[in-house]
Length: 493
Image 1 (cartoon, rainbow, N blue to C red):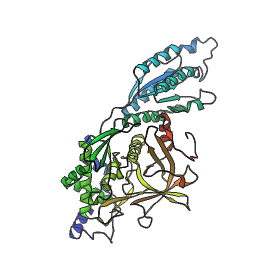
Image 2: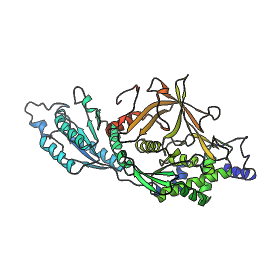
Image 3: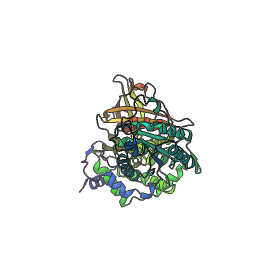
Image 4: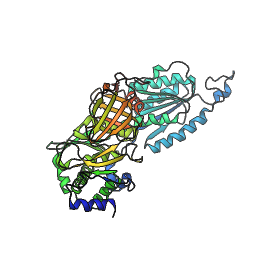
């Protein structure tokens, strides 16, 4: 008899008392969630989006300049530098990025080598405005052409990645570290170029996204978040409740319950009824996502009894499908932004502070376990009753790894949106009780602020990994204000 069969047999005999005081340690050996969910989550829920169209321009003079220059001087990077060969190498890698990130790269085969070429490109981007521009400069003397293209992209509000592949630009570069531009001067750093392309593509994907707001609204309605362009559709909670009660506890449900129980390190106070209701919530939310052609959801989820969707929210975020608590739309926008940019789910949480250690606490009841991404390893977790009520609904308590770097983000929407970003590291995950808070409680050291109490915002999103610079560069590239009060660290600030 396997763990799930034992659980079902014991629970059937005495569901109320099952493991409430005993606790059952289980080995985390069977059925990774990513494989189980891949079969359970309808592929149609994963909406396909159009990738960003990005114009790619190389800047250097024709190769004949090397031979025809009478004094043998072509300027940096020197007469032996094979600019055409570098363009071919870069183009090959760019095509790989294009396929990997579902982009549409329009790569100019002929380099821009003078004012005439530059004006031709400017006219083309004015007529057919791309989602982004990538300038790759191999020659110090091409800087004047790059400046003209940067001026045009600024006037057209086109986010631009400006890459100098060698140390060919002498002197200060502060002028290029400005809103609307991701400036890179780094030796053949194609990873940096890839980040720039991803940042442009993230904004494009968000503009095609739809988020469900499940509230007490009587009818469905839709509006659009003004900056990122995310469509927000209000859906009556009654529809979710209807789908919840219609959900069948079928083979898929039993298979997912088995995955949950077999991988948990402990099960504490959880009954068959609570796990089955967790599956009903999961299938109801999946049906809503599919019916409404949506990418994610936020929900008024408190005081819902056994209809609470805590487990489902963890499962959905594990698969990079945004699910946020308490119908917090800014938290949902932040989760959607982070999932698209760094391909990892964030942990929406309540803030608390440890004043004597100068640490920060993040706690809530819907923590994902695949914080390293859908294909990464899984955090240890236990299944337990929801921390604040007695009806017996189920939640997941996840245990973050000590010393892992983390990035905390909060997006503030509006006509002039702001992004707040913090860097830190995991100190420990606390048991519940005595640490209190919600089901998952993570203690964090904030590493780019002198005082942890400087952290602002409620329901910030905590991402596992060192991504603070990624988010700050995203804000810089897309002309967002950074709310980095008291930030202590390298540019961008």
